Image 1 (spheres, rainbow, N blue to C red):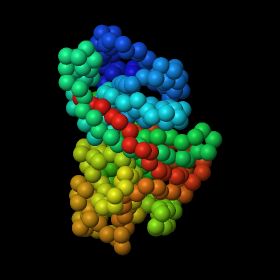
Image 2: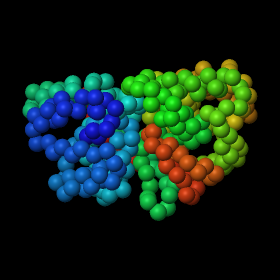
Image 3: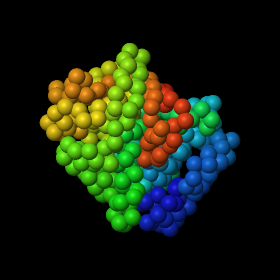
Image 4: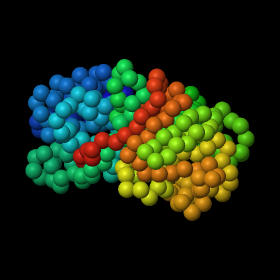
Length: 308
């Protein structure tokens, strides 16, 4: 459990009390990736069948990275509890209940008196952007305007005290308004980069580049329309693309195929691998990373997630 995650921080003591009633459960509180890794290394010696993750998108990203970097055996199931601010990954994986309700349902299941959690299998992204520290793993990758939007949230929205998913949603809406003005804006930087897949190469200045194994993103938007049978959704939009005001509503709801054309600066595919050269920073599940080498993305085998 990450005690500094948004929702967890607001109800920390009741959550601790609920966890204390769970049979056969070991609790470790950690907010830094290194501490999360140490806890999971201790647990791996006991071959746990289930790891419960209570936190936000960044907490789940740190858990995935720690497990996939250190484990040579199949991973345990991951029960995801939405305890963060945005909880985009948890929502798409199927989490509906609040943390307290999930813990109550988990206790009933462990005691043989309640329903089992829902199960979904989903691949994770493997992102290599630093040859020294090894790959990072997560569910959503972005750069360009996506990165500047997250920075805007941390600098201008979060300090106001706005709680929950409303804060990221406000930052997202602010970025959309900047897009619709069709004028240069710090939130909309041009990112020169070369993109390469197994079959295509593109070099341009990009408004945004994103890749994800999630089906739906913030506030339910689905900004990809590829049809290939591959686990990684990929979308790239050139800086100052044509007909943006007409295309944008279709792009956000996953209906871009009919109006968003490559000749106008819109690309979307489902992929297994992607390389990106030219971007010095990237975002993975809300966490910012520096790239010291060309960024390479691939996907893991499907992982087993549980939700209530």
